[in-house]
Length: 582
Image (cartoon, rainbow, N blue to C red; front, side, top):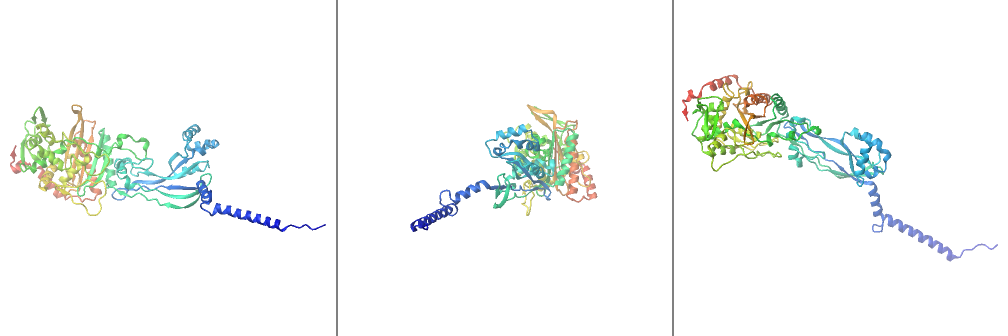
């Protein structure tokens, strides 16, 4: 048998064909893994792979902490988990709905209904802001298309005590009320991002790294002292309940800096329980609500009168027979006080005396003084919705308008404006801007708007208000001297003033010899027969002021000095000076 032979050209043809195939294969591999511009090359394949596995996850930013002036937390953010789902995936797994709906506390029909509404979406929330252990219980079911993400929820340790001042955030951690809203940009952090690889079930397999670091929000230190805030809240709440009042407010102001040390309102709310919040409770009434202040304006009008140089504390006004006719309106005192010097006009809160004094002045003198003290304008706190009040001015003043201005009708203001005005009396005529933030470093000096000789004279008058025979004796504080003024005002109704709706108030300074704080108290519509400021507001002032001075470690005053002051206050001014009759 002849041996088999292979022609050389065939051999080389086969070898060449194999080489061509090898080169072609290498070329294809190169196009897939090396060459960037090849059609559907390695960039395309990597892109497709990344699209299926590589994800960019947000990193939630921590919202800034709000504290009181001493660093006590008022608003903090706590980590929580939010459960979300991809409806398009979950709709393909109806056999898993029963276990999931049971864990969520829903009916299966409710879950199916929600999935149907979002059937064309790839994202929907199932539950927001769950405790981590509760969220893990849901994830442990291993339901396809159900995932979690880290978020933060705002928590308010002080609860309703500082609710209206601090405010609240919404479910997305954005400020909605109070300082949370006013300083939202300051408190809000900047979210970050990271890249991760996820498997087909959406579970994170590997963290690839940080693409953008999260920036936490900045802290905010308020001016309030949480100890004083608790004290004021407790006393106001007790009084509003005792007198069956509609509402009430208290402001405690540091006279040396203008910082608000406490600001409370009733009714209040618990910001940690959103289900029970009522809209009316959200208002920070001390800053957003206005009222006619009544007789608390008399000392401020008295400053204007003394500043003219025509009057002194011993100037005498005849209030007989206990009323005065101004146009068609008769203005009354509770009794016929007879002849009163200006000090006793204030201590007795004589409507007749203030009316006669006001009518002796140029029409704009009192109005201009009120404006200099800060009425009819913002206090500069930056609080959302702060009211500026109404301070009318007239081209031609009617006598009744002059008179009512002097005893607190025909204008309105906020509690903070009233406290700021009294702080000018306490500081010898220096006006400080009101601040809701803790002041640090070198203080900006206040503005001298009234000569201190006039404010000192009025401060002496205000000490007489709380002495025996005055209208504010219930405002006295053990171991400290105080000075202040009561106010009782009818509330306006359609066409006039109500006969049975009142606002009772008291504003005072303590210690009177070396003032540290101003405390303003307002009780809105007390329902009992007690409605005068000296009955409903003065006792609250006493409780809050006494506790506040001790908490601030103000030294008790010398007992002998207090006794001598009482003797001085009990000496009739008429007997000392002879008096000048108006």
